[in-house]
Image 1 (cartoon, rainbow, N blue to C red):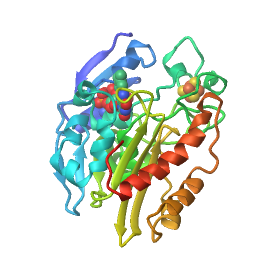
Image 2 (cartoon, rainbow, N blue to C red):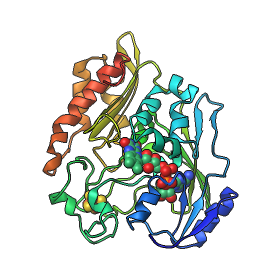
Image 3 (cartoon, rainbow, N blue to C red):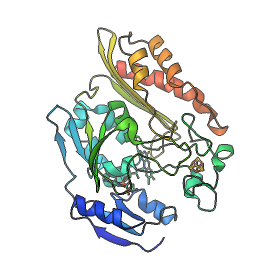
Amino acid sequence: MNNFQYVRAEGLDGAARFVAGHAGAKFIGGGTNLVDLMKYNVEKPSALVDLNRLSMHDVSELPDGGLRIGASVTNSDVAYHPTVSTHYPLLSRAILAGASAQLRNKATTGGNLLQRTRCVYFYDTATPCNKREPGTGCPAKEGINRTLAILGTSVSCIATHPSDMCVALAALGAVVQVTGPGGSRSIRFEEFHRLPGNHPEIDTTLAADEIITSVDLPKTGFAGHSAYIKVRDRQSYAFALVSVAAGLEVTDGVIAEAGVALGGVAHKPWRNSQLEQELLIGKPANRDTYHEFQRALLVGAQGYGENDFKLKLAPVTVVRALEQAAHEGEQA
Ligand SMILES: Cc1cc2nc3c(=O)[nH]c(=O)nc-3n(C[C@H](O)[C@H](O)[C@H](O)COP(=O)(O)OP(=O)(O)OC[C@H]3O[C@@H](n4cnc5c(N)ncnc54)[C@H](O)[C@@H]3O)c2cc1C
Ligand code: SF4
């Protein structure tokens, strides 16, 4: 691990300006991902700007009926917040399916969004990896890729985004609030993470000197009909091979609203709102509808050998999550 400066942020402006003015400086939330990466010499920040003393610890209701989750609220505090567990059970379930209680107590909302891939080559500095060192290659395509992507891949990278929480946030249609030296802006969740393309080293549309201040949830939380299914090697403390967050509003057996996102299959949570409009909304809430939707959602999926099983696992998980959501079931 390299030597680095530690700075406790006293204000948003000062923190953003410090990172803008110091090459290699990074923000730190709970440190559960960043410090691991520093120990592996994958991340070598020149300075860490600690955001934990800033006032981003609240969960508050928005005037339009939505909910604002401060960037420093821990994953546990989000999952067990009474408004979240009542009105956004999909989010609670997804968070509690991830990591361990100790990690969730420390990990923050902002940090969860920016956690990095779990591709083994990314962590192993003895191997090439385009995401870690652009231009060195991607050994995963013909190598160890059991956990990696089947959708939205590029010749440069087939990594997945590992978060559970982000899959639920994508299905819920969250909005990320950020601020930096250039001012504040809102980023729709679907536009926050990016596909690898020719620049797999860039995970998101956030600038290096921008701070996530909160994540806003819309009024609709699919409280009555939602499911999070996470298929993994162990029932706890394992990342998703495939996960699906599904939320539905069903009236008289017909789907009135829908939000469906997949984890473990792409460089970002995989959601297609247009297909939801065309193939779910206004259609009967039954298995035929779900099958037609999953076929369209997974068009173009491609395996790389070890991860070929996801081509069969993803469709059945989508259908099962939608059936479970329609029946208000818990994760099996
Ligand atoms: C053993 C293990 C198992 C795990 N299993 C799972 C799992 O099953 N599912 C799952 O979803 N996750 C899992 N995780 C990952 C865990 O959820 C993340 O490590 C955690 O959410 C990161 O949050 P953090 O606050 O600790 O981030 P940090 O490590 O502090 O930061 C991560 C990144 O975010 C940046 N950052 C942090 N806060 C902000 C902000 N407000 N604005 C801008 N940038 C910011 C940092 O600069 C850094 O780049 C696991 C982790 C471990 C170690
Ligand atoms: S899949 Fe991406 S993260 Fe993994 S080795 Fe290839 S470039 Fe690196």
